[in-house]
Image (cartoon, rainbow, N blue to C red; front, top):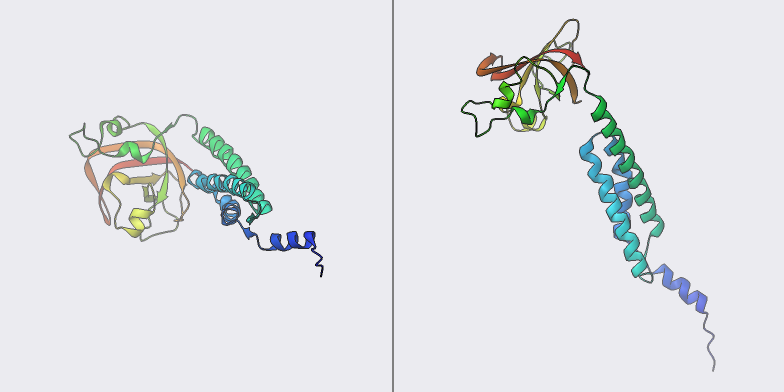
Length: 221
C-alpha cells in the first residue's frame, strides 16, 4: 500500500501556522502614531521606538522563519517611523534655530527656578535678566477670562496648574501685551518676546499668591 506525499502542500500548511510577530505589529502601530512627532520634539520617542521595534521584528523573523511571519508589517512600521523621525527632527531643529526674533535672548523657565547658591527665592541668573529683551515659550494659564486677553499668566506646562493646583511661584510670568495685541486661551504652546522685569519680592496678582517675573511683551506667536 503506497501513500503519495504532497511536499508543497505540507509546506503551505506549515506557513499557515506561522504566527505574526507581535514585535512587527508594535512597529506598525508606532509607525502610525509617529505623526505625533511633527507636533512636539518630545514625541520623537514614538518613531524612535518604531525603528527599534521594526529592526527587532525583522531580526526575529529572520532567525525563526518557520515560526514567525510579518516581514511586510515590520518593514512598513520601520519605513514610516524612519521617515517621520528624520523629517520631524530636521523640522524641529530648523524651527529652534530660527524662531527667536532678532534682538531677543532665548530663556527657559528652568533658568527662573531657585538654586542653592542664592539666598533669595529666585536665582541670581534670573536677577541678571532684569530689563533684558527675552524670548520664552509657555502656556496661557486658564484664568476666569479666556478671550481677548491683554494680561495673563504664562506657565511652562499645563500639568501642574490644571491637575495639581496652582503652579509654583517661579513657574509663572505675568504677561502684559502691548496694544493692539491680545490673545485667547488655548492649549497651544505660545511664543512671546519682550522686556522681562524681575522682582525679589512677590508682586500681588489676582487669584494667585503673586509673581516674581513680569513680561512686557511686544512679540507674540
